[in-house]
Length: 374
Image (cartoon, rainbow, N blue to C red; front, top):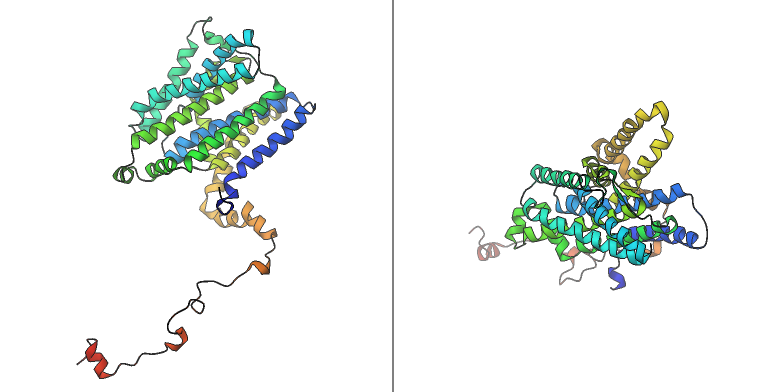
């Protein structure tokens, strides 16, 4: 890649997450011991970011409404957790068992994405939302009614807990992998085909784009990444219970995408981290009789954020006080970098100087030659 084509805006999220990973991971590897609650919060944030970025591929870039993302996560959590529980007694709770569980969970979720995507993606709008919502509820019910020997039934599946000191490092490495997959896909010709389908499906078909193919690719990729988040969830908890993956959780993931801005990966990252922090912080602050206010305050915070980000009356305030405006305000312009416009009329060479063309006088003979009055 030539330096002239390097766009730093495309890599800001890598830099921020990579810096966080280097600082916290380096401190952990150096022997510093963080509080368990902080480590668990970082794990949940990483899982939320993977879910939000992967769903943004379908909702934000493809333009289809899916409410079954928790179902794909459920498949990855149960199957990946089951493989982990079988491998850990013989292989140990290390990276090898984790990697195998990760591949199995992602592959299982991708297969479910194929099975559901082929018939469902022929639908649009509310119909697709209903089908994916039904898929999530079916998956939850199936795992809930399994035997205790297979997937734990109503009590849930017991899974091995990875070392808290290192799991958040692995989780954020997988966040970087997720960003690389989604962003490279979106910026490729295949991603441009997906966004063309979102903008106008009929026009995309007219230009020769295989709409079903690209819809299926986006849906399968999103499902596989949700399966990765499910495997992380199983390693982050001692038990996987199907009740966690209900439609409310799918809607929560959708809120992360909508709150961050449709088609904005950086916005989805920030919204996922914010909502995860709110879900962790509010129960610790509002306890006892005040616990009934948790959902109310949570909803009010989300409403305020959505109104601030979308209200036309606040557009001037947002444009004046956003991050880019503040950075430009403190950045001093260097006069040496200011050049004249190279396209000015007195710079472009012409056969006749522009200041010489002041008027054109036509004689009667010229008028007759060029079709004027005779």
